[in-house]
Image (tube, rainbow, N blue to C red; front, side, top):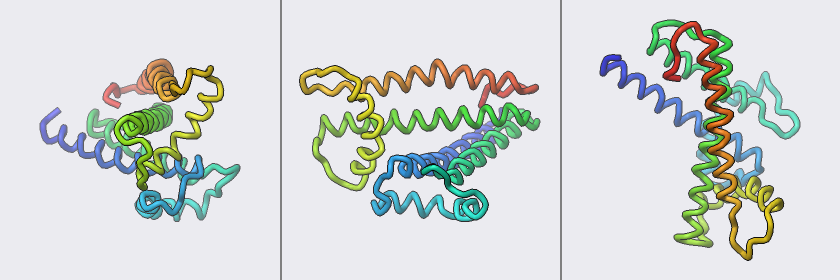
Amino acid sequence: MSYLLQAIFSLVQMIFGLYLSLIMLRFLLQLVRADFYNPLSQIIVKLTNPPLRWLRRVIPGYAGIDWPCLVLLLLVQGLELFLLALLFTGHLPALSALLVLSITHLLQLCIYVYIFCITLVVVISWINPGAYNPLTVLIYQLTNTILAVVRKHMPDTGGLDFSPMVVLLAGFLILHLVVAPLMDWGNALNNIPMRIL
């Protein structure tokens, strides 16, 4: 791969990665019923609204799940992988491979978001416990749901909270035991080498 192609490849990954992270955050924050009027929530909403406004006209939300947001995640992720495959191989990826890889990349992104946020919660609790600002409020709202479920099933540890460690460990296990095999399967569905994806 030439230096120019590498630069374009990295640029595509960066731009799509940032936008996908915003859409994923919007979806997860809505799922846990985070504060919609938080300044950071409003920034995320404004940056992701244009395509969602159009999708909401044709896809309704159902059972408390923002289906237009999920569809947008799948479409944007699929477009990124399509462009990367075209840049890297010069060939179109198989549709089945594109679907499997898109879903797998989104699962991976979701886990990365939680790993990052839970790590941030732990660091904040060490450095500045009780800190209150728009960022910490959203992070606590996002992580408390999953951490509360784990805390319910953990024995009393005398005031020490091991739930973040358990969730982080589970996240890394899912990455290795679920995401990695799905990536391999998605790549195997292709008739062209797509290991880069």
